[in-house]
Image (cartoon, rainbow, N blue to C red; front, side, top):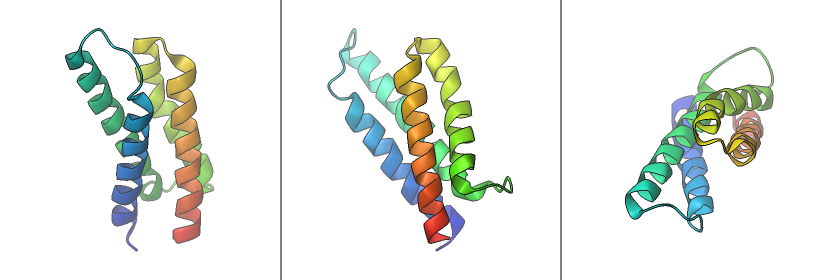
Length: 104
C-alpha cells in the first residue's frame, strides 16, 4: 500500500471518529456546530494523513505523538478546551503511528 493511500484512509477514519465524538456536544447554533465539526475533521484528517508521509527517522508512533500534539495545540488554545483536543490528537496520532508501523 502506498503511503499516500494509507494516509488518506487513516485521515478519513480519524476525521470521522472525531466528528462522531463531537455529535452530542452543545453549541450556540447549528452553524457553529457545523463549523466546529468541519474544522475538527480537517485537522484530524491532516494529522493522520501526514504521519505515514513524514519521515523523522523515529518510530511512527512518536511521529504521530509529535504531529498530534503540534497540530492540535492551536485549536486547543483558540477554544480553551485543552484536554479533549490535545488528548484526542495525541491518542489518535499514536494509534495511527502504530497502524503505519504495522502496514508499511
